[in-house]
Amino acid sequence: MTCVSAKSCANRGGSKTAGLRQPFSKAVGGERHVVLVAPEIHWNTGNVGRTCLGVGARLHLIRPLGFSLDSRAVKRAGLDYWPQVNLSVWDDFDTFFHAFAPSDSEICLFSKSGRRPLWQLPITRRQFLVFGSETGGLPAEIRRRFSSNLFCIPIQPAVRSLNLSTAVGIALYESRRPKDLH
Image (tube, rainbow, N blue to C red; front, side, top):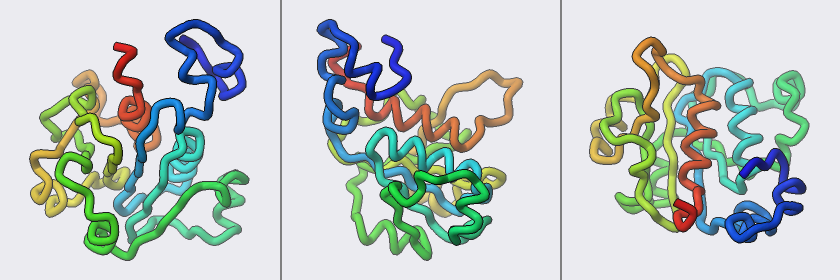
């Protein structure tokens, strides 16, 4: 199935796409949260915000941020949709974690050191997809704390890593895949 916009999905028929005639977030159900720990590049964060908006996910940014969220910086990045993003900014990971208290099965960390591929993500109604900064990845303390929840996106050995916004898009859409379409 090829859909490039909500309108094109709505215009398609057939049994496998019938569930996509409604907004995407309602069609596949569940609550998704994308958590960026210390993101450094506003362009990547802007792309992640647009993806979250398109999927109906909430975006959480954990300080420190490598950029300013003031309106001038956001406009410079071309993020005219930014006010529509369901965004929360947190001073640290622990404050965020205690506010939402995700269960062990609801939190999925992404790292190139993850041992489980993303298609082994648990099936949960509420899910938190956690990513580290562009240059440093997830802090070692967070990786240790949730070592059984580390996932990776398999890539060829010649590639050091994927762009942060690309990795978020891959993981977010995989987490939203209707499981009955396999």
